[in-house]
Image 1 (spheres, rainbow, N blue to C red):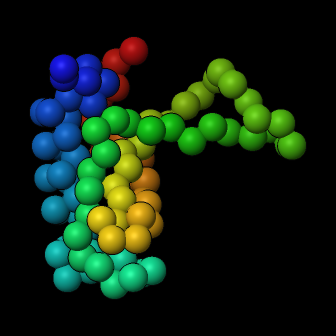
Image 2: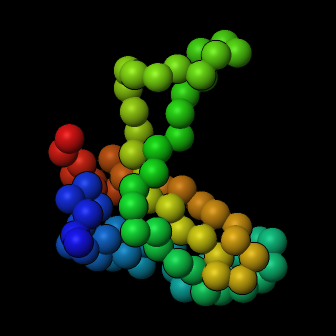
Length: 88
C-alpha cells in the first residue's frame, strides 16, 4: 500500500533533492566508510523538548531518514526544506 504521507512520488523527489545537494563523492558514512544508503519508507519526526519535558503537539518538522546499509548510522533531512509536501 502506498504511504500517503511519503508516497513513491515524494520519495523520488527526496532522492532527486539528495542527488542535487549531496554529491556522490561525499556520501561516505563517517562511522564505517560505507557508501551505500537506504531511504526509509516513512517520514519521521523528532519530538521537541520544552525544558526537561517532552512536548506533544504544536509545531512539527517532518524529516526523511536515510540509513547506512552497513552500520545503521542514520541521517535526517528536513522535508520542509526539501519542499516535500506533507498534508495531514
